[in-house]
Image 1 (cartoon, each protein chain N blue to C red):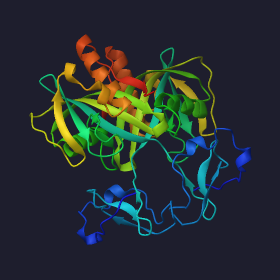
Image 2: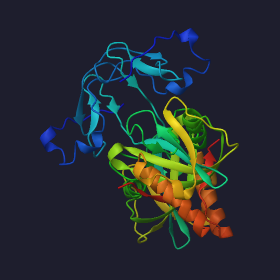
Image 3: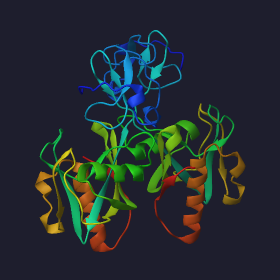
Image 4: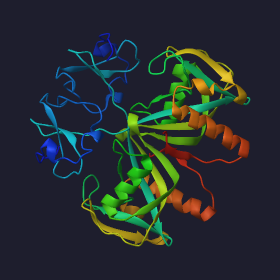
Amino acid sequence: MHRIQFVSRSAMPENATKPLGKRLSYCSHCGGTVQAQIPFDDNRPRYVCSHCSMVHYENPKPVVGCVAEWEGQILLCKRAIQPRYGYWTLPAGFMELGESIAAAAIRETREEAQAEVRIGRMLASIDVIRAGQVHIFFCATLVAPAFSAGTESLDVRLFAPNEIPWGELAFTSNRIALEQYLHQRETGRSYVWSGNAL
Amino acid sequence: MHRIQFVSRSAMPENATKPLGKRLSYCSHCGGTVQAQIPFDDNRPRYVCSHCSMVHYENPKPVVGCVAEWEGQILLCKRAIQPRYGYWTLPAGFMELGESIAAAAIRETREEAQAEVRIGRMLASIDVIRAGQVHIFFCATLVAPAFSAGTESLDVRLFAPNEIPWGELAFTSNRIALEQYLHQRETGRSYVWSGNAL
C-alpha cells in the first residue's frame, strides 16, 4: 500500500490511460471506489483506492504452450471456445499460480489435446502487447501418438509441415512459433526467437 | 463472465486455497463480495463475485531484467527498497502493460541504474513459484560506462566476475542468472536456462 498524490486526469501524460488495462471500479481489498491516479512514488497511472489508498497494479499475463512433435508431425487443436472458435491453435493457455512455465505447457496440452508431452528447450517468447500478454512456446515431443479433443477443442490432429493450415491459425503467435520451429529444424539452428506479434 | 456452481469450502480439493494468491474480498467490477469457488467450467478455485458472478483470475507476473556488461564487468544495483533493502540485484522489475519484455528490461535498467543498455539474447527464464512470478533475464551491453543510483538504488557498480558479492545478492534468481551468464561466457555456449528458483 502506498500513499498517493492526487493528479487530475488532465495533468496526466497523453498516453496515461493506455497502460491501465482492464477497467477497475472498486477496490478488491476494502470495496471503496478506485480512481486512475499517478501514485507519488510512481510515474504512470494506476487504479488507486480513494478509501484505503491501495494501489492496484496490473501486469501482462504469461500464456504458455508448446510445439509438440510426433515423427515429424505437429499437434494442433481446433478451438471449441472464443476467441477464434473453429481456428487451429498450438496447445497453450494462461499460466496458473503454483506452477512452472514448463508445467503450464504440459497441463495445457493435457487439457486441450488429452496428450502427454515431454518438454524440451524454449522456442519463442512473443510479446502480444495489445492483449497484455507474453506468449512463451517450448519445443516438445509427444510421449505416444495418443490424443483427442479436450473440452476446449473440437478436433485435435497431427499435421505434416506441408499440411499446416496457415490460413486457419487462431493467433499470430501460433504462426510465429510454427515458422520458427520449422525454420530452426530445417537449418539445424536452435535459439529462442524473441519479439512482437504484430 | 461465467455462471458459477457454488462449491462449499470443504468440497474443494486439499490444495484448493493455494492457487488463489492475493486475498480478494470485493469485486473490482461491481463492488459485491467475492468468495472462493470452483466455476462450473473450471477445475480450480477462483474468487467469484456473489453479486455479478464475475470470475477474478489471478496469474503469475513477469519480472524482467538483464545482465548488463561493460568490458567484462557486470552492472549491479544496491537496493534502496524492500524487499531485500541493502542487497545487490541485477536491474529488473515487474513488466508493465503496453511494453515488450525487452522494453521492460531497458526501462528497469534506466530506472534503477540510470544506464542505457543494448538488449541481446535471452539468458534465463526462472520460475519463482512461491512468489507467483516468472523472472526473465536478457544478456545486455552498456551503451556507455555511464550509470548512477536511481531512486530505487543506494549504489550502482560494475563488478568483475571475481568481485561479485555472491553472499549479498538480493534474490536466488540473481544468482542463477549471474552463474549462467558467467558459465555460458566461459564455455562459449549460448542457451536459455529454464527452471525453478528453489
